[in-house]
Image 1 (cartoon, rainbow, N blue to C red):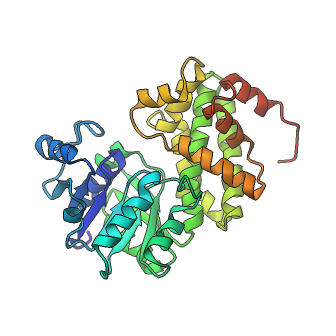
Image 2 (image 1 turned 135 degrees about the vertical axis):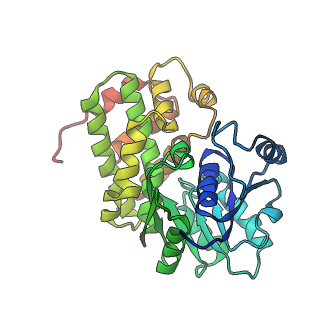
Length: 335
């Protein structure tokens, strides 16, 4: 077990809460920050995140807080688990509060920055400086399973080996294994792109296209992920690991995936994207990611046919059946 550290986890959604619970169970003192003071009070009173992780008790050494300055006071590490569109703003706010200190930073947010189409490590280096101590944490995980202490494996990636190892050690216990590596680009692309593919498999299953179609989408989705990653400088082998294939298979095949459920909801053809997202009640990262990836693909001249159909579907330019038809009637080619 790691020696006790004082950690701030920023973002009290399902994933942020689950990671905070795990770190507290390892033995660290954890501040869990939410930007809504009312939610912080509810977490304290209920001793659980009733909205996102009902029935999972918050450990005694986990302190929900509504003040960002209070959350990061005297901590040695900050883990960002905010939506991708709020990442830069939160990072800037934290930097102002910790100026001059040598804090370890990491994020478990998956996605691109929507407006700039930048990967989150690019945003982090812009805000914190190229020599800052940062890492990205990703992999095939569902929040409720992590919160319940079920066996989990993730990857910690950093351009500094010691930083990747720092976060791996921080999380390690008998039920949680964190592998380390240096390919931040590949890890981030995998974490973002798999959400797009989960929407596609959700649509396919919602239309009762069968297991053959799902397997085809997963395998061809893997090809698209690799294509995008390599175009941005990622390593091909990263896509064969936890942050690539592992996360892709999990998100595309299990109904706990919000992105898969979103695609399933669209498949009926009776609901708009907004209506399906409202019913799910949480952020569907794939909807944001596909718009960003579409812009990137056009800029890089990449052929990403599944992504293209998901983009048109989310934009409500085509129906689910039209999307499937477009993919199945593409001209034959060598794999």
